[in-house]
Length: 250
Image (tube, rainbow, N blue to C red; front, side, top):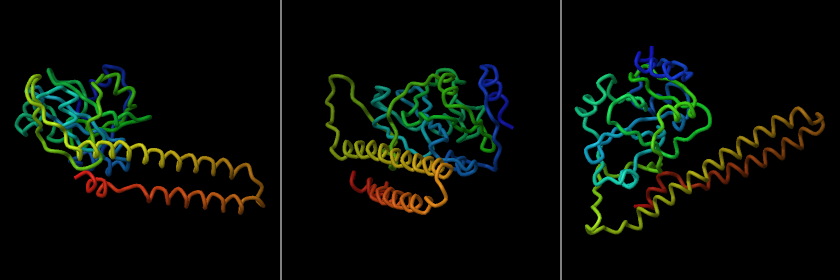
């Protein structure tokens, strides 16, 4: 069963939720596989220390943290991953790697990536590797009320510590490669989301059309839909892969 304190917190605030149980899932990606859902629907928590203050970074399991962007979002001089012993001390009521994205611990901030906004439900670990909860994103957002910024990337994570100078100190100019990579990430997000929406709408129209057409009209319509799908898949194939995006930005 989900950890008692997680259930108590949700029930105390009147948040409807569903308990989920599965074999050990040590990471958010493994949780997505265990529950047979997209990694975009599973919220993972990355614990960092920003200028000596702990933060939960909340983002989809399918994305990675860009520490430069986190530094900018928090206006911090330094952001680093929390050490295992720090996490164990801060989140003593959670198994390692199963910290839920909740406000339960004193002096721990919560920063959510913009890409975590979804319509419908999200899933996250309930403080153990065997238990999770499913609830509406809007309910979770109102409960946690996180700060929101764009700090994730679809590529590999950046360096795990970043220094930002104080006002008046020399400021290094950001490399063109970093700016190009950010633009490519944002563009790919938009393109992939548009492709998924077109596919969804095509399927919906096809289902509705089946119930309206006469049998004699079906072969022609089926041919038209086949051509439309082939064109859509051809456009999707033209989108650059994550590996190609990484090559362009390095």
